[in-house]
Length: 386
Image (cartoon, rainbow, N blue to C red):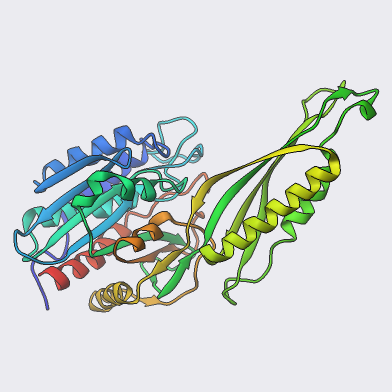
């Protein structure tokens, strides 16, 4: 079924590109996206949404385009946050915020949703509703859960939720889309070991965490096994370690070890955290140390619903977007939480084979993806809602 307003005009693309670059220059990190949320609301005001919900899960914004006729609710989601990474390079629109940058392409994802808003501002769906969700705090894994827990989210009640992520290494404009698991579960484990300091000339009078750290670092990484290809990846990656004070006269009494735990499924994560915690307890007991554990950046695995994925796949076929199933990604994504409230699916859109990787300090979202991502989502919406 071919419908009007499926595509952006040349002027749309020019204006949306300029807006994406404006966002690129003003990144805000997780849970601090106040100015970004305000910018989104200002841009969408011109599309005359039927309702706007702000402060959703913190700084989130949801714009609703309602046909007024019964039908399903489709939610399209983008992320508001940037990263605590200083941008390098000489782009005219490079980050103006020291130490922060849009190194994951969320500026581009927001622009694709803004493009949908512009089109639905011109022509509402014939039935049901479209919700454009600009979600906070994806990068630390807390945003989707906060949005869902917010009382205001009950008014949205999506039947389907869709999302995309740009992907360097994949040919520009090509897509990966698969059923089932698409992103791994992960969490950061902060291990704190406490003994007792001593004079460096008499280390035996203290309780040093050094032997425990020396045991834990190889023991934790040895928990890794399997692979994405075999569907049983377990990965423990040491990301930080510190022991004592930067002084030559003090034998250490405190240490920290940080490790990122990653698995294909949430169920397997439970087993991995249990194994890691047992290693810490044993090392602390052997060293006469007290210990404490904290978990940060908690992501569940992301699972594509087959029906929702089929709708995206049909849209790609209709729009002649090359696609393949690909593999699940090692990286994590909190979009998977929306599977608890709707049929959800996410796909990866190629950013090009010879560009910087995500989270590199010189990464920049390709503007050519704006019309491609938009037409895929627009096709899905118009085919379901008319």
